Amino acid sequence: MKAVVSVIGKDKIGILAMIANECANASINILDVSQTIVDGMFTMTMSVDFSSMSESLDTFSTHMEEMGKEKGLVIRVMHQDIFDSMHKI
Image (cartoon, rainbow, N blue to C red; front, side, top):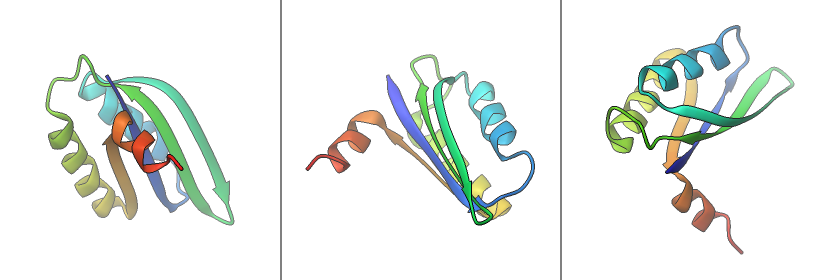
């Protein structure tokens, strides 16, 4: 089962490592990463496999959103099916 993790915020050292560590702690496998920095703003999208996850996707999503707020980032986690439906024309 796949999900999409998106991160937006002011660029600073360690964002990718922080998100990767949280995924590893929840037994989530990172499948693909795309990131860019434009005028000091960091944006990243990850495709992840959460089939071995140690908690529910909702619990992980809430945890990541709260962590993002603490770090000055906007972090969203959504099931791949929902992401795909949102981006169909």
